[in-house]
Length: 90
Image (tube, rainbow, N blue to C red; front, side, top):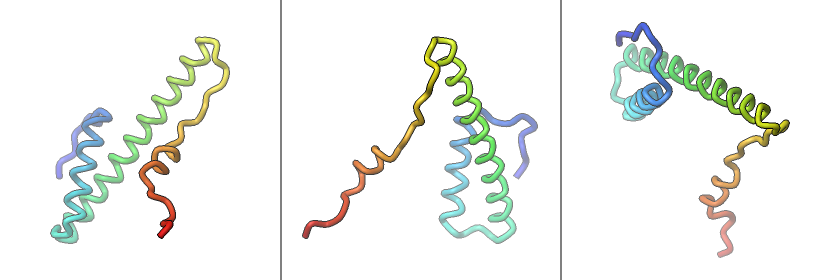
């Protein structure tokens, strides 16, 4: 799997990562291919994490410039709770 000399943008990296996960989940790759695919997935994950961290830092800087000294952490817990049916009452 040849690597691009320039890292992909966030959306392309995420799209490629999703495709790699699908390939790995099928379970039909030979071991060497699976390892190379996994390694590429780790690279893409790190790239995406870095891009998200940089975006978060930029947002915090913009908020501080606009006079908002504090930021609130984004939590997904509320969304995941709404999808969770919760304990069964039956």
